[in-house]
Length: 588
Image 1 (cartoon, rainbow, N blue to C red):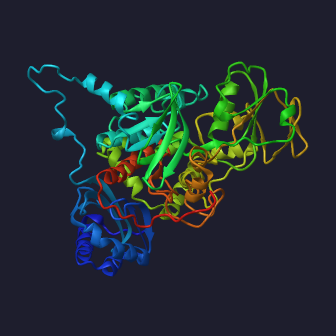
Image 2 (cartoon, rainbow, N blue to C red):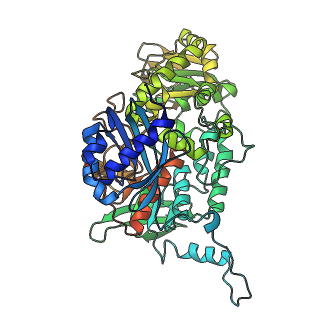
Image 3 (cartoon, rainbow, N blue to C red):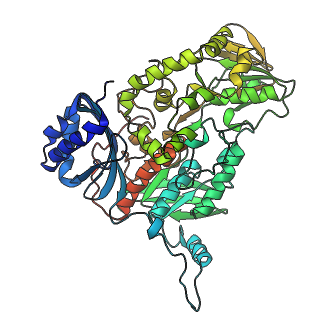
């Protein structure tokens, strides 16, 4: 993509753009975009997360929204392409990429609401009232009183269902904005969603990518965080950020009261039912739904152990045993390697081609999140916003050259995997792991060691076959071969996050909202039509006052800001007019 020099041309383009907006000239503003230009807006113009593709779509949005938004105060930033701006209700950050003097991509994001800014720095609370005060109410007194009241006598404005990394990060954002929010989770302690996984699990993304809002990991933190260490960090975070968090709490019923415009939620806490009436519910139950366990003929005859990867605790006790792992994505590789490390005889059953990229190679190509980036002044926030500034529709043309370079760099690695019989893919359009994750959230493995075990045969491989049936002591494949087995692990993934809406609320609400995640790329597991954004994530859905929050740690950190701002605006009664609100669906 040919770009003009931002240092000279961006201020000029921004001046013309601001002038067109000030005049209410939607067509004139749209004319400043390339024919195939994009405008990605995070809440600031649309009260939505939406990408407008092409001049007509941009002009339509501006025609509908300029009167309410009243944008102005556009000021170029210190970094190329960046600028700040204001709207009637808030302050924002933006970025533009120019192509032959026209905007190829424009990014706008609401960063804060006027009059409702977070308290920080010079505006932080004093924390104590100095002087001699009888019957002083201390911080501890206030925390205990608030904990005893919220969810009982005082209703949360937002109920966050799910207390993993997503719910915790969002809870911190809401706390800082003064939004009464309660997080509920069925696990015993914050962080248990990580602790309860198989023992060898580590984060596959590096530390620079994984910070939580406000509280980055210390600079001695390991690059790849072990899962129990992550669990402890989340538990500490809940305490430090003073989040209202109910553990060991199970949702029993959730229903929408149309007349009162609020939810009725009954949970079980400490063995007793508690009914709450929050205005908004956020499902932060993870981007995956329920475990998908295949139902193979003869499964009831199998005399060994069989379970889904979500129930696999580790390789201990399987030394000398024959283990079959069905699947070939992250969990399958991790579990297979862990079993091998504990002395098991392991066979990985690969049913379809898998995208594999080495963790070290990915880290090298994720330059925004690194020590070098920090040294160059690229903070986590700058990295996050830079990543967000690229519309999903433009990603393929950006990612194909990167994938081709990776394939050249790691050609020997891929050749050895292929020689072992492993079926590789780099995406249907050779765009790699990023677009595949956005489209389907699965289909890949970030290699942290298992690929070498497969390449040299220490982990056995059966590829391009399906399970035909199970017998008392074996897995029979559709090519007629048979794998003797003491353990079968189904690393076969999860359903859509939408399933949680169906389980906790109703199938009707799940159908109304439709599919969560995916872009509508019309590739495998991501049916069309094209939407250009992740379906139903972090933005209004077809069900009033129901929101979804999930994704990896970077996405949770970034988009929790915009979800929290949307909820804060509603708490304060600001005029929120959603542009591009999703239509009602009838099948998830």
